[in-house]
Length: 267
Image 1: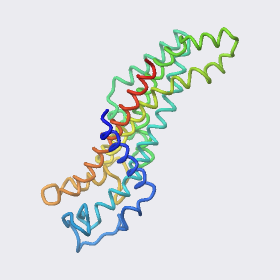
Image 2 (image 1 turned 60 degrees about the vertical axis):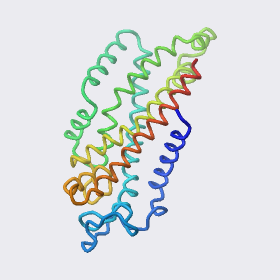
Image 3 (image 1 turned 180 degrees about the horizontal axis):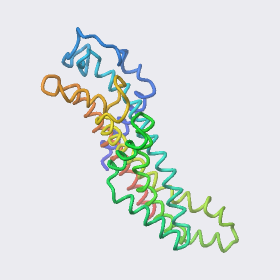
């Protein structure tokens, strides 16, 4: 991966995290303040991203929206990583019958598109911020579980694991000290790229009205509010869309870099 692209991706993600933690560093505007007299103003010195149909500053809403989108993206990815690691490792360590049952269950769930699974979960538990996080997490858990299972099967046959067994190390210690740490590496690389995917999925569900409710400054909701003004006020939807795209591209670049480094270490 070219160094400039990697540094640009890392720099953008750092700025994104800072904007989520300290939005006041980037803007003093209130993302919820309405002013009909300033409605639909084009991007300019006072409003870098323009204003929306109620006069709210789009730049402020995008900056404050990073807090919601990143929280959902990182939260859903962390839940999927932990639960997938537990399920996949358990399947890989079990005997053939238990492994077969869990593997078939994972494959059946993975036959459905992740976005469809998230929609089903939302339909069952209802819309909202917490529901959005849970739905996105549950939709991607099977992917993490599958990778964890495959990696566990590889690791448990490795020479250092066999040596630990020969030396009389207990199964529990062998799993905690050797199997899980070496299974976790590929999952962390997968999770790095998965954050962007989770953010996109969450934005898509919010766009459909299944996430936070107005006037919450969440990226998908901002897109949804701006879709009816594309002809007259394109900036309402375009800028949050560009930020979502840049986030996905940046996490993909960073994830592929980590994947390449991991492959070189293994070789």
